[in-house]
Image (cartoon, rainbow, N blue to C red; front, side, top):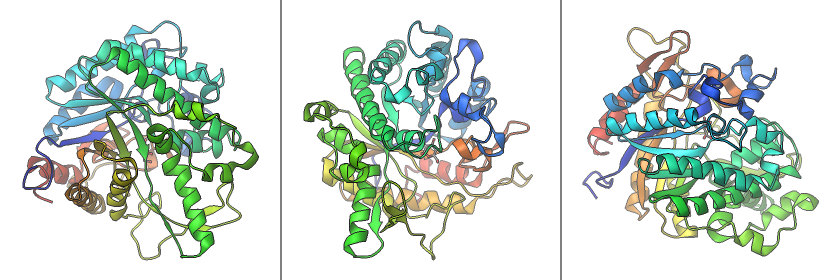
Length: 447
Ligand code: BGC
C-alpha cells in the first residue's frame, strides 16, 4: 500500500465497449449484431443514431491508444464483438475479426498498457438472436465456444478477462422492459434470459480453466437501494429491487442460489429451476468487476411492473444528464456490501463515470467539465475509503475514455473524459482527463 491509500500497482484505467465506439460494424467479414439491427429499426435509438461510424475506433485505434498513453493510463478495458469473430454466432471463425483484436492488444502492450478484455458487452450476433438469443439454452455452449476461440488467440497477452458485462442490463433492458436490444418486453422471458446468461458465464469460465492461464471474472452493475421510509412496504419494495438488480446475479455466481424475492416478483412466470441447476451457476472466479453509477432510494409502488417498487428522486442532490443522482457514498457501500456478503474477493471498479452536457464541438479554450471532475474525485475518494476499510480493490476504470454511443440514447449523452467531435472525429481531452492524469501520476496522492 502506498501513502496515497491506493495499492502500489493499482490499475488506473478507462473502459469502452465495442458497439459504442468501433464503427465499421460489418467490416472485414463481420456479421450484424443485435445492436446493429436495433439501431437500424426506426424509433429504437434517439435521433436515429447508429453505431455505423461511432468513434471510428476500428480504424483509429492506434490514435486512441496513443491518447491513453499520453494521459498516463495504466490499463484499458475494451470489449470484443462476437459477431466480428463469428459472423453467424457459431461455426467457422472469421480470423480477420480476431486479427483486429490482436492488433489492438499488441498495440496496447507496446505502449505499456494492460488490457482487460470483456467477451460480451451486449452485442449478440443477430444470427443467434434468430435462434432465440439468450432464451435458447444452447447459448451457454455457443458462448463457451466463442470464448475458447478468443482465449486460444489472445490469452498469452491478455491477463484479465471478463465473461459478461452487466447481465442485469442485458435481461432487464433486452427482455423485461424492451428499451435495449433485442427489445422484448416479457416477464416470462427475463428470468430465463438471466439464467442462460449465468449458465453462459459459468461455461465460459470452465472453458477458460481448460485454455487459459491468467484471470477471469464477471462484471455486474451494483446500485445500492435504500428504503425511502422505514415502513414495512418500502422496506420490502427495497429488498425486491435490490434482489432483482444486485443479488440475482451475484447470489447465482457466488453462492449458487437465487434470492427468494425473485419468486415474489415474477409469480407464475418464475421458472421452477432445480436446485442443482442453480448450484451449477457457481464457479470460482478470480475477481469481480463492479460498475457503479448511482444509488436508488426506493418506495413501494403498486403501479410499477413487475417489481412494485420505484425510485424517489432526491430533491437536493446533483443529478447527471441521465437524471442519475450523484451519490459517491453508494460506491463505498456497494464495495463493502460485496465483501460482507460474499467474502474477500479481488475487486475492480470496472466502470464509473457521468454524462454531463458538453458542447458537440470542443471550444478553442478546451472542454471544461467541472461536474465530471467533481464526480470522479468524490468517487475515487469513496474507493480509497473502501480500501481503508479492508476491500481488496485493485483497479479503477473510468467510463468512458471517449464520448460514445450511449445505446438507446444515442450520441447526445457524453460520458467521455475525452471529447469526440462526431463531425470531424477530433478527440480533445477534457479537463476531467487532465484531472485523472494527475491522479494517476501520484497514484491517487493528489486526491
Ligand atoms: C454500460 C455502458 C454504458 C454505461 C452508461 C453501463 O451500464 O456498461 O455500456 O454506456 O453504463 O449508461
